[in-house]
Length: 294
Image (spheres, rainbow, N blue to C red):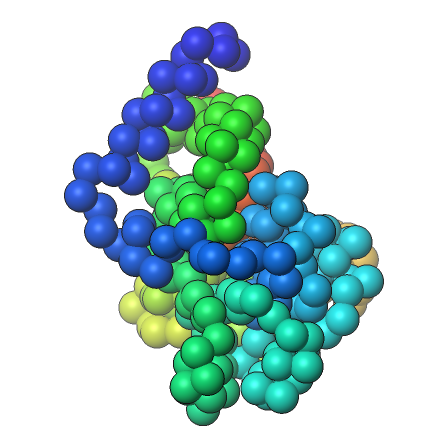
Protein backbone atom coordinates (compact mmCIF):
# COMPACT_ATOMS: atom_id res chain seq x y z
CA UNK A 1 0.00 0.00 0.00
CA UNK A 2 1.25 3.51 -0.83
CA UNK A 3 3.20 4.95 2.12
CA UNK A 4 1.76 8.40 1.60
CA UNK A 5 -1.73 6.93 1.94
CA UNK A 6 -0.72 5.23 5.18
CA UNK A 7 0.65 8.50 6.56
CA UNK A 8 -2.60 10.28 5.75
CA UNK A 9 -4.60 7.47 7.30
CA UNK A 10 -2.55 7.65 10.48
CA UNK A 11 -2.93 11.37 10.94
CA UNK A 12 -6.67 11.13 10.32
CA UNK A 13 -6.82 8.63 13.17
CA UNK A 14 -4.35 10.64 15.26
CA UNK A 15 -6.64 13.65 14.93
CA UNK A 16 -9.27 11.50 16.65
CA UNK A 17 -7.06 11.58 19.75
CA UNK A 18 -6.87 15.36 19.76
CA UNK A 19 -10.39 16.50 18.96
CA UNK A 20 -11.70 16.81 22.51
CA UNK A 21 -11.80 13.11 23.35
CA UNK A 22 -10.96 13.66 27.03
CA UNK A 23 -11.17 9.97 27.81
CA UNK A 24 -8.02 9.39 25.75
CA UNK A 25 -5.91 11.58 28.02
CA UNK A 26 -7.52 10.51 31.28
CA UNK A 27 -4.70 9.26 33.51
CA UNK A 28 -2.31 9.29 30.52
CA UNK A 29 0.09 12.07 31.51
CA UNK A 30 3.78 11.18 31.34
CA UNK A 31 5.16 9.58 34.49
CA UNK A 32 8.24 10.96 36.20
CA UNK A 33 9.85 7.52 36.31
CA UNK A 34 9.11 4.53 34.09
CA UNK A 35 12.35 2.66 34.83
CA UNK A 36 10.68 -0.19 36.80
CA UNK A 37 7.28 -1.15 35.42
CA UNK A 38 4.99 -3.75 36.99
CA UNK A 39 2.07 -4.83 34.80
CA UNK A 40 -1.26 -6.42 35.69
CA UNK A 41 -2.86 -7.13 32.32
CA UNK A 42 -1.81 -9.05 29.24
CA UNK A 43 -2.75 -6.41 26.67
CA UNK A 44 -0.66 -3.77 28.48
CA UNK A 45 2.35 -6.07 28.41
CA UNK A 46 1.80 -6.67 24.71
CA UNK A 47 1.63 -2.92 24.09
CA UNK A 48 4.83 -2.20 26.02
CA UNK A 49 6.62 -4.81 23.91
CA UNK A 50 4.97 -3.29 20.83
CA UNK A 51 6.54 0.04 21.83
CA UNK A 52 9.98 -1.63 22.19
CA UNK A 53 10.11 -0.71 25.88
CA UNK A 54 10.08 -4.17 27.43
CA UNK A 55 13.44 -3.58 29.17
CA UNK A 56 11.55 -1.40 31.66
CA UNK A 57 9.31 -4.28 32.87
CA UNK A 58 10.35 -5.94 36.13
CA UNK A 59 7.30 -8.12 36.83
CA UNK A 60 4.02 -9.24 35.24
CA UNK A 61 0.76 -10.97 36.08
CA UNK A 62 -0.01 -14.47 34.75
CA UNK A 63 -2.24 -13.20 31.93
CA UNK A 64 0.85 -11.55 30.42
CA UNK A 65 1.86 -14.55 28.32
CA UNK A 66 2.66 -12.81 25.03
CA UNK A 67 5.21 -12.51 23.65
CA UNK A 68 6.79 -15.76 24.81
CA UNK A 69 9.76 -13.89 26.26
CA UNK A 70 7.45 -12.23 28.79
CA UNK A 71 6.95 -15.55 30.57
CA UNK A 72 10.54 -15.37 31.81
CA UNK A 73 9.84 -12.35 34.02
CA UNK A 74 8.81 -12.62 37.71
CA UNK A 75 5.08 -13.07 38.34
CA UNK A 76 2.89 -11.04 40.69
CA UNK A 77 -0.04 -13.50 40.39
CA UNK A 78 -3.42 -13.24 38.73
CA UNK A 79 -4.69 -9.83 37.62
CA UNK A 80 -7.89 -10.07 39.70
CA UNK A 81 -6.30 -11.55 42.80
CA UNK A 82 -3.12 -9.59 43.47
CA UNK A 83 -1.41 -8.72 46.74
CA UNK A 84 0.06 -5.33 47.53
CA UNK A 85 3.04 -7.03 49.16
CA UNK A 86 3.86 -8.98 45.99
CA UNK A 87 3.70 -5.86 43.85
CA UNK A 88 5.73 -3.72 46.27
CA UNK A 89 8.41 -6.41 46.59
CA UNK A 90 9.35 -5.59 42.99
CA UNK A 91 10.10 -1.96 43.96
CA UNK A 92 8.05 -0.53 41.07
CA UNK A 93 8.36 3.04 39.85
CA UNK A 94 4.95 2.66 38.19
CA UNK A 95 2.22 0.01 38.14
CA UNK A 96 -0.05 -0.52 35.14
CA UNK A 97 -3.40 -2.29 35.46
CA UNK A 98 -6.36 -3.18 33.29
CA UNK A 99 -9.97 -2.48 34.20
CA UNK A 100 -10.31 -5.82 36.00
CA UNK A 101 -7.24 -5.39 38.22
CA UNK A 102 -7.99 -6.25 41.80
CA UNK A 103 -9.10 -6.86 44.41
CA UNK A 104 -10.21 -3.29 45.22
CA UNK A 105 -8.42 -3.36 48.57
CA UNK A 106 -5.07 -3.83 46.86
CA UNK A 107 -5.70 -0.87 44.56
CA UNK A 108 -6.58 1.24 47.60
CA UNK A 109 -3.40 0.17 49.42
CA UNK A 110 -1.22 1.13 46.46
CA UNK A 111 -2.90 4.50 46.11
CA UNK A 112 -2.74 5.17 49.85
CA UNK A 113 1.06 4.93 49.75
CA UNK A 114 1.22 7.07 46.58
CA UNK A 115 2.43 4.41 44.16
CA UNK A 116 2.07 5.71 40.59
CA UNK A 117 -0.80 3.41 39.57
CA UNK A 118 -2.41 3.72 36.15
CA UNK A 119 -5.59 1.78 35.42
CA UNK A 120 -5.90 1.87 31.65
CA UNK A 121 -9.52 2.07 30.41
CA UNK A 122 -10.64 -0.35 27.73
CA UNK A 123 -13.09 0.29 24.92
CA UNK A 124 -13.78 -2.79 22.81
CA UNK A 125 -13.31 -1.15 19.41
CA UNK A 126 -10.46 -0.46 17.00
CA UNK A 127 -10.43 3.18 18.17
CA UNK A 128 -10.27 1.89 21.73
CA UNK A 129 -7.17 -0.20 20.95
CA UNK A 130 -5.45 2.81 19.39
CA UNK A 131 -6.44 4.95 22.37
CA UNK A 132 -4.94 2.38 24.74
CA UNK A 133 -1.65 2.24 22.82
CA UNK A 134 -1.41 6.00 22.67
CA UNK A 135 -2.22 6.36 26.38
CA UNK A 136 0.49 3.91 27.44
CA UNK A 137 2.96 5.50 25.04
CA UNK A 138 2.17 8.92 26.55
CA UNK A 139 2.75 7.63 30.08
CA UNK A 140 6.16 6.12 29.33
CA UNK A 141 7.16 8.93 26.95
CA UNK A 142 7.20 6.79 23.80
CA UNK A 143 4.75 8.66 21.59
CA UNK A 144 7.11 8.69 18.56
CA UNK A 145 7.41 4.90 18.86
CA UNK A 146 3.63 4.61 18.95
CA UNK A 147 3.22 6.82 15.90
CA UNK A 148 5.78 4.82 13.93
CA UNK A 149 4.51 1.37 14.91
CA UNK A 150 0.82 2.23 14.46
CA UNK A 151 1.54 3.74 11.08
CA UNK A 152 3.63 0.85 9.81
CA UNK A 153 1.93 -2.20 11.33
CA UNK A 154 -1.66 -1.40 12.33
CA UNK A 155 -2.99 1.15 9.85
CA UNK A 156 -2.65 -1.18 6.83
CA UNK A 157 -4.76 -3.82 8.61
CA UNK A 158 -7.30 -1.25 9.81
CA UNK A 159 -7.71 0.07 6.29
CA UNK A 160 -8.14 -3.50 5.00
CA UNK A 161 -10.85 -4.18 7.59
CA UNK A 162 -12.69 -0.97 6.77
CA UNK A 163 -12.45 -1.61 3.03
CA UNK A 164 -13.72 -5.17 3.35
CA UNK A 165 -16.68 -4.18 5.52
CA UNK A 166 -17.58 -1.08 3.50
CA UNK A 167 -17.50 -2.81 0.10
CA UNK A 168 -19.10 -6.12 1.00
CA UNK A 169 -22.63 -6.56 -0.31
CA UNK A 170 -23.26 -9.60 1.85
CA UNK A 171 -25.62 -9.61 4.82
CA UNK A 172 -23.71 -9.38 8.15
CA UNK A 173 -22.92 -12.79 9.56
CA UNK A 174 -24.68 -14.21 12.59
CA UNK A 175 -21.90 -15.38 14.91
CA UNK A 176 -21.45 -17.37 18.11
CA UNK A 177 -18.26 -16.90 20.15
CA UNK A 178 -17.48 -19.98 22.27
CA UNK A 179 -15.20 -19.37 25.22
CA UNK A 180 -15.01 -22.97 26.38
CA UNK A 181 -16.58 -26.41 26.02
CA UNK A 182 -16.64 -28.85 28.93
CA UNK A 183 -18.80 -31.85 28.18
CA UNK A 184 -22.26 -30.50 27.42
CA UNK A 185 -21.51 -27.13 29.02
CA UNK A 186 -20.87 -24.47 26.40
CA UNK A 187 -19.82 -21.00 27.58
CA UNK A 188 -20.59 -18.30 25.00
CA UNK A 189 -20.13 -14.54 24.75
CA UNK A 190 -23.15 -12.46 25.67
CA UNK A 191 -23.43 -8.68 25.58
CA UNK A 192 -20.77 -6.64 27.33
CA UNK A 193 -18.07 -9.30 26.97
CA UNK A 194 -14.80 -9.07 25.10
CA UNK A 195 -16.16 -11.78 22.79
CA UNK A 196 -19.16 -9.61 21.97
CA UNK A 197 -16.82 -6.71 21.28
CA UNK A 198 -14.74 -8.87 18.95
CA UNK A 199 -17.82 -9.99 17.02
CA UNK A 200 -18.94 -6.38 16.57
CA UNK A 201 -15.49 -5.41 15.30
CA UNK A 202 -15.92 -7.94 12.48
CA UNK A 203 -19.16 -6.24 11.42
CA UNK A 204 -21.16 -9.27 12.52
CA UNK A 205 -24.14 -9.96 14.77
CA UNK A 206 -23.77 -11.79 18.09
CA UNK A 207 -26.57 -14.37 18.19
CA UNK A 208 -26.50 -14.29 22.01
CA UNK A 209 -26.50 -10.52 22.48
CA UNK A 210 -29.73 -10.80 24.48
CA UNK A 211 -27.86 -12.41 27.38
CA UNK A 212 -25.26 -10.62 29.48
CA UNK A 213 -21.75 -11.80 30.24
CA UNK A 214 -20.15 -15.16 29.59
CA UNK A 215 -22.96 -17.68 30.05
CA UNK A 216 -23.67 -21.35 29.54
CA UNK A 217 -26.26 -22.02 26.82
CA UNK A 218 -28.20 -25.14 25.90
CA UNK A 219 -27.94 -27.25 22.78
CA UNK A 220 -31.51 -26.23 21.94
CA UNK A 221 -30.64 -22.53 22.09
CA UNK A 222 -27.69 -23.02 19.74
CA UNK A 223 -29.77 -25.01 17.24
CA UNK A 224 -32.53 -22.41 17.38
CA UNK A 225 -30.14 -19.52 16.67
CA UNK A 226 -28.27 -21.55 13.99
CA UNK A 227 -25.18 -19.32 13.58
CA UNK A 228 -23.45 -18.77 10.24
CA UNK A 229 -20.04 -18.79 11.93
CA UNK A 230 -18.56 -19.99 15.19
CA UNK A 231 -15.44 -18.40 16.67
CA UNK A 232 -13.45 -20.47 19.15
CA UNK A 233 -10.20 -20.25 21.07
CA UNK A 234 -7.39 -22.53 19.94
CA UNK A 235 -7.07 -23.72 23.52
CA UNK A 236 -10.02 -26.07 23.02
CA UNK A 237 -8.17 -27.93 20.27
CA UNK A 238 -6.46 -30.14 22.83
CA UNK A 239 -9.85 -31.78 23.34
CA UNK A 240 -10.99 -31.67 19.72
CA UNK A 241 -8.05 -32.08 17.38
CA UNK A 242 -9.80 -31.08 14.17
CA UNK A 243 -12.79 -29.15 12.92
CA UNK A 244 -14.24 -32.47 11.77
CA UNK A 245 -14.14 -33.98 15.25
CA UNK A 246 -15.79 -30.88 16.73
CA UNK A 247 -18.44 -31.00 14.01
CA UNK A 248 -19.30 -34.56 15.01
CA UNK A 249 -20.16 -33.42 18.52
CA UNK A 250 -23.95 -33.92 18.75
CA UNK A 251 -24.26 -30.46 20.25
CA UNK A 252 -23.14 -28.88 17.01
CA UNK A 253 -23.61 -31.17 14.06
CA UNK A 254 -27.06 -29.82 13.15
CA UNK A 255 -26.14 -26.13 12.88
CA UNK A 256 -25.16 -24.29 9.71
CA UNK A 257 -21.73 -23.16 10.85
CA UNK A 258 -20.52 -26.70 11.41
CA UNK A 259 -22.24 -28.18 8.38
CA UNK A 260 -20.35 -25.65 6.24
CA UNK A 261 -17.18 -25.85 8.38
CA UNK A 262 -17.44 -22.14 9.13
CA UNK A 263 -15.34 -22.26 12.30
CA UNK A 264 -12.68 -19.67 13.07
CA UNK A 265 -9.95 -20.65 15.51
CA UNK A 266 -7.53 -18.10 16.93
CA UNK A 267 -5.49 -17.40 20.04
CA UNK A 268 -7.79 -16.34 22.89
CA UNK A 269 -5.64 -13.47 24.12
CA UNK A 270 -5.10 -12.20 20.58
CA UNK A 271 -8.85 -11.96 20.06
CA UNK A 272 -9.97 -10.90 23.51
CA UNK A 273 -7.06 -8.86 24.87
CA UNK A 274 -7.76 -5.75 22.77
CA UNK A 275 -4.10 -5.11 22.17
CA UNK A 276 -2.27 -4.78 18.83
CA UNK A 277 -2.80 -8.45 17.89
CA UNK A 278 -6.57 -8.06 18.13
CA UNK A 279 -6.61 -5.96 14.96
CA UNK A 280 -4.86 -8.74 13.03
CA UNK A 281 -7.34 -11.27 14.45
CA UNK A 282 -10.28 -9.11 13.34
CA UNK A 283 -8.84 -8.86 9.84
CA UNK A 284 -8.35 -12.63 9.72
CA UNK A 285 -11.96 -13.24 10.78
CA UNK A 286 -13.36 -10.66 8.36
CA UNK A 287 -11.42 -12.18 5.46
CA UNK A 288 -12.64 -15.68 6.30
CA UNK A 289 -16.26 -14.58 6.63
CA UNK A 290 -16.52 -12.33 3.61
CA UNK A 291 -13.94 -13.59 1.10
CA UNK A 292 -15.30 -17.12 1.23
CA UNK A 293 -18.67 -16.22 -0.26
CA UNK A 294 -17.79 -13.37 -2.61
